[in-house]
Image 1 (tube, helix red, strand yellow):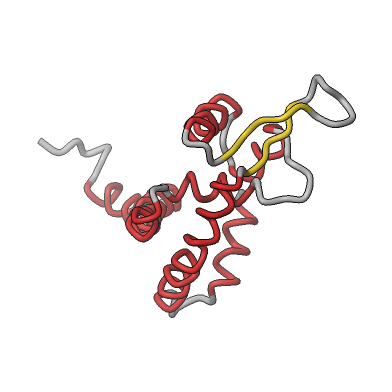
Image 2: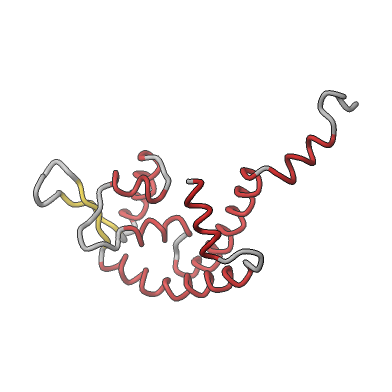
Length: 147
């Protein structure tokens, strides 16, 4: 039985208006697309993003990656451990402060990124082509504004 204080129109309003619902649904679809494309390289889209974030002249600290990747420290640490066990990333003592830990790609991690980057680019090109009602740059700018 339908509650008169909670009409079907409220369900339709949320379905049609809710940015959270639409963003989550889109994020899942995009994640599946990139996961499938990167699967032959043995990484998920999240692992690829973490590895590419390590591609810096000076290794980042975990605290540097938290805002970039939008992950909490505990989740990021767990994801990094998987990549370290696979020999794709490593943690090193800071050169100026031995108490800090700097993250770095290993040679295997760099090789994986080199082989996966063209696939990532091709997948991104296909995704950019789907955005017909808004430019990819405007879409990214809007997402950055929200974040």
